[in-house]
Length: 238
Image (tube, rainbow, N blue to C red):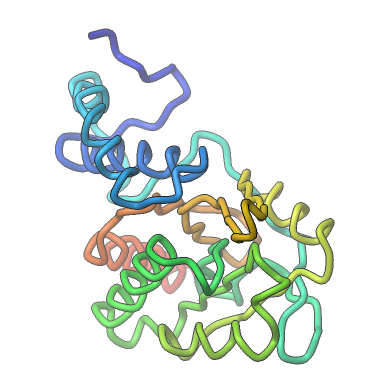
């Protein structure tokens, strides 16, 4: 099978390549609207053979990050979303020397969101005192149901350092999504609300640059690895 990497695509090696490509495929299926997690996993398993050959044509990475480092950086600098409680605008970038994890989700999500948030919670436990320099900003894609009373309480079960972001209008949500290349939709089918969203978490530095992306399914050990590297780098550059 021919190598599917283009010249500008990132290269990762061996097991990391296989794991990341599997996770990327899973994230793509989520974005395409396969809402049943079991169906999604089975579908990805059926075509996972497409991902495995990618490692054969990968090159030695110059980075030890286990998430996806995009070939061209995304920036959320200057992009803000309304934070609750309080109603103030929160700019989507980390504090100096820290890392901000940005995630698009919703509190009624039955599988993808809690799976990712638990992994982030466990990753923070693994890095000890460094966790005090990691914030989580969750932007709800379902602002009609995720109110100022609900979203903060939901996030507090995963971390004590969070920003509950509830877009004031559709334009605010789309502006944030565009900054990260994310998409979502909320529709009603036969009286039932259906929400489609991506599963990627984005790690943002204090300039608003996305330094690494965590596709859905990345384990907490890999997340802890990336957080440790990024935070230590920022300690050395202070």
